[in-house]
Image (tube, rainbow, N blue to C red; front, top):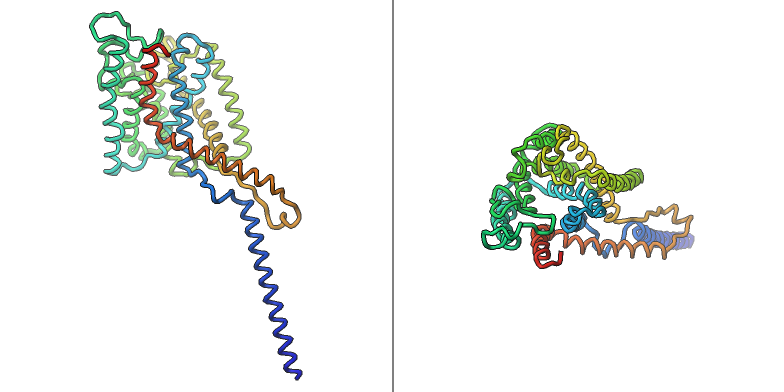
Length: 386
């Protein structure tokens, strides 16, 4: 009898123990669900990947490219606001594009070599004569008389002469196709060098002293922009691009933005030539009597552009990062979480992610926009809308 009571008591204790374990498991699951709700954004929403974030950056940059080309005629006409904007955006938008292109550059396999031919060489071979012939017909006329001076606007021409074009001198914006091809081919050799970014920065400072290079096959621009392309590749290898940033870097980026705006206003006031940002011609042509200081000017441009790129990619990270709210179990036990506030944060994050993904789609089409937007400007100018 006593033995039976002991067995019965043991069974009750075992049942109670199992109930306690089950309750503890349910509590743990519930706490894990609550914890995951606050440590991650809504999992049902797709978060922008690194590729999406850089494509979003390309959307922003191609918008600045189109804006810069649109207001260039106004700047040449003496519009001060247009000049300030051009100093501001031309100081970094092309280097940022080049850096992103370098980031995506991989080893030149046979498939990638074929892609270079189909994506850069073939478009250039087709578009170069098309744009030159179209521009000649629109702004020089079809006869040999000089009744038209080739000016797209009253103060802006994309060609210096009726027949002054061939494949060795890219038309207007098509220089980027040739430069990108040359940088892509040179990259494997550049990566074999020590201190390769510094070495190519020195080359970029020296190339402007050669008056014979200029716009021939866009060599001048290619040499000056190579450090950004190489830096993009090195950032990809190190994984340093768009890393989480601290509050100090955010404040530094904000300070840099203010400095860039102030510097652009000052540059427009003292008539700093915009051509220093075009990176296309020799120092003698751009700086005139100050050409002997060209290397120092280009070095200053490198420093200024590095500051601008720091600001741009920091702001890009802040704008596209997925925000998270953290809560520990200990805090949860002692503090009450504001559920409506966290729900609002998740909705805000979801809306922002959706916008980034939509604009990233258009960023992936940036090359088409880059190629065709100049044709739109030419037609607008011809028919009096620009």
